[in-house]
Amino acid sequence: RRVHGDCFGGTRNSVFFFFFFFVGLGATEMPSILIAIHYPNKTDEKSLVLGANVARLLRSPALLLHISGRRNSTVDSAPCVQYANSQGVNADFRLIAPPAASSLMDELVNEQEMPVCTQLLDAINDGAIEPLLLVLGTNETDPTGLSGRLGPLAATAIRECSRCPVLVVRPTTSLGGFCEVPPRPLRALVCHDVYSPCALSVIDAALPFFHATRSLVTILHVHMQSDVSQIYQLLADATHRICQASLHCESQVEESETVVGSNRVVAAAIGARICRFLENNNFDYVVLGTHGGQDPDSRNLGSVAEWVVTHSSIPALTFGNVAHQAHVHRPSYDSDSDS
Image (cartoon, rainbow, N blue to C red; front, side):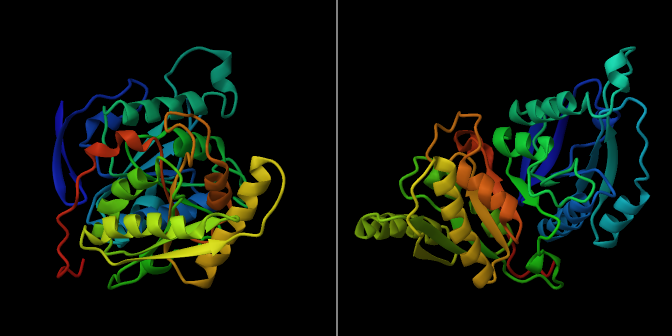
């Protein structure tokens, strides 16, 4: 059926259908923000708080999704919905579970979880549903949320969600300006590889979020013994691109210690330098392309992106296959609004 959803202040019509085992999801209009939770997992308590406050900032409804691998799952949704409502957000809750099928596999914990997650991502990537944002914790399967690794849902969503950004939060993440009332302009750090073919596409895809949150943007390039003069010219081009969109933007070049080793060793050195920079400069969130210099159609998560997402002290806004981000419209943000 045809539904209407707000996208950073713009209105979109879309044909909406859902897979039969998404229990009750097709019974309501699709909201703009999806918040994946395994409440009361520690990581997902943070994703709930972050998601509700982002929905408040963007004046968008939210849908809280509890994804389960068991057919007969139950969860007390009241605290989740009550918290979102307390932030002035119109929120609904849905439990997503496998179909009621007589299979021994259905009785095994989490055995059906990833197929359900895959169908959710397929629905997003195929355009069957068009959420504004997907918010989730880094490790939804870890009861403490402190493993420092990406859980299967987070890893799959960050790597493969191509038609909407994914906002990722760790259990120790500081939510900073996202929770401040009245809201203030947020400070965004864009991790920009000037040599990546995807880099400018990531910036273009992030512009609507920058506008909607009145973000002050800093573009950062971390290098190892590169031609700095060329880097500054490429950064100037990227900065000009953002300034042309009537946003405040500056750029910064940082040098990482030179290391010799595998791609992961190099990525860890660059990622550590990025995280030190963001911690020393009081940013509210970091923006990343998930594929770096890889082919944007690759299903492998970039090493630097993975390192930053799993170590960042602030939320990470990730953009997957940015070639498909053209459907995201620039917002009509009212700078005089106090909501």
